[in-house]
Amino acid sequence: MSNTTTDTTADAVNAPVLSKLEDGVAHITLNRPDQANALDDATINALAAAINQACDDTGTRVVLLRAIGKTFCAGGDIRMFETRLDELAELLDNLLVPLNKALVRLQTSGLPVVSAINGPVGGGGIGIALCADFVLAADTMKLRCGYSAIGLTPDAGSSWFLAKRTGAVYAKQLFFMNTPLDAQACLQKGIVDAIYPAEQLLDEATALAKQLAAAPKHVMQRTKFLVDSAGKLSFEKHLDAERRYMVASGGEAASHEGIKAFIEKRKAVFNNA
Image 1: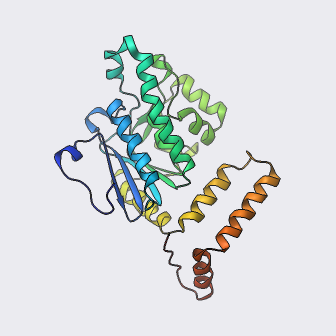
Image 2: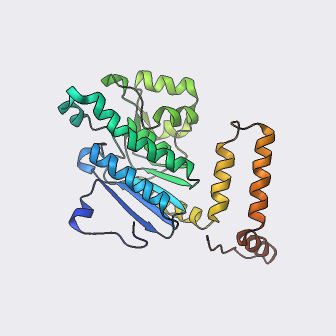
Image 3: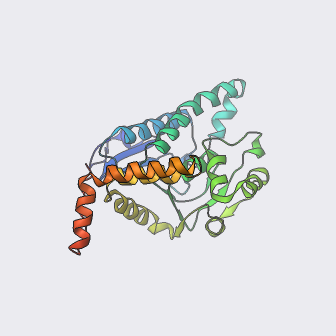
């Protein structure tokens, strides 16, 4: 993952997933627009590799998930499934193992994640879109689960993230009935956090990612852990985790710079070491 440039060679441009690191933001882009960014084996392996690379790179402070074309992600590549029905169970297992590991890695990295849903999203694409801390959508965005219509069950974290955002009852209704939702309905139900005109979405998502990247990296990681672990630890243990992180942060340069900037009435500048 390069720091400031994008590889424009033919192989890179035609890759199913594009990645670059720019100003602390790891851009991970689905790049199968002619196939609605459907997830075949090459795309899943490339996506998992890009996520792992972003997590490994110490220069990464934020991850931005996006897609090229008019569709964010249609989910699994059903045309590929149809050609391999005799081995479908094994195929699905081989696809989901690396994807699941990468999604767990991303969730436990502590890195803030932004997603930009540029159009329709379904199936496993829902999990990829909703794994973000900030889910931004184009006004052309639509969501449809679709699993039960083809005799399959949710994957890629779609049932986890959708239930966390809407509650279990409504999530079950969406999965059972495959009810399509437009962008406004998704906003009202808390599935997405903001809607923008399609032509403005990427600029808005990039600006948000850069804003997050300007904050102290360890502070963002620790804060994400604390919020994500709320209710999983006892209150006593949660308070202890808050204390430990507060003490650790107080001994670091970022807090010293932030406090000085507050007193001096200027914007803090963090080195994100």
